[in-house]
Image (cartoon, rainbow, N blue to C red; front, side):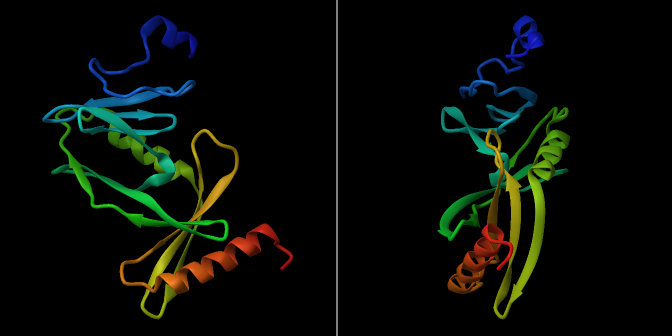
Length: 173
């Protein structure tokens, strides 16, 4: 915990239902209409979940947007692995109304963009996929992720992803 955190607290809103990891620092927080909070930390975005809160790591934020209707989060989930590549699928977007958003939307944008080291769009006959190299919070190095478009042949995407992982592991190939 940093020196200022020792004097002024961790910046957590009263009644926060999660438990921060050692070394996880609060960057910003905003109350959600209807209960709970969005809490931006060094490791991810805490969102209301049931009677508590859960953290979505920055590497699993597929999309985040801020508009008149609130803050919309599209979380990605790991569905499989193809070689050293993590295959992702987007969950249904979730909308949060923030009466006083403060710095939350801006900080989310900075942290999501900061987690991306490289990205590449690959088109396939029946769709396409994004290949994204991302930093995983709290870990050294990066992970290669692929997010196929709905309707894209998963076997084809996984074959290309496995080939990409092999090339990254042995660049002389």
